[in-house]
Length: 125
Image (cartoon, rainbow, N blue to C red):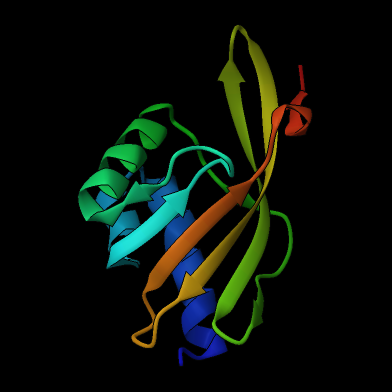
């Protein structure tokens, strides 16, 4: 089972990947057969190729993640709240998100789920 320190480090590596705009850094935290659902309720993206394509598109928007508190860990899961400041549809806004990671025995993320919806997209300008 991964340690709390390993899981917290994976979350920070994920945030850092967005800060650098580098999809490969994000893909590196995921297991080969990982599944992401971002946002929750959308079709899952399965495996490194689909995950890479998703993060290439996400990072092309210039999105940066700003943690809104500590990473929460329990058993083989981590959860973290953050917001994404961006310019969308002609206005400045923030999207407020909670992501969850489930880890495999090797400390790689096997499942990521992002929880947010239209009510979490808040105009800031």
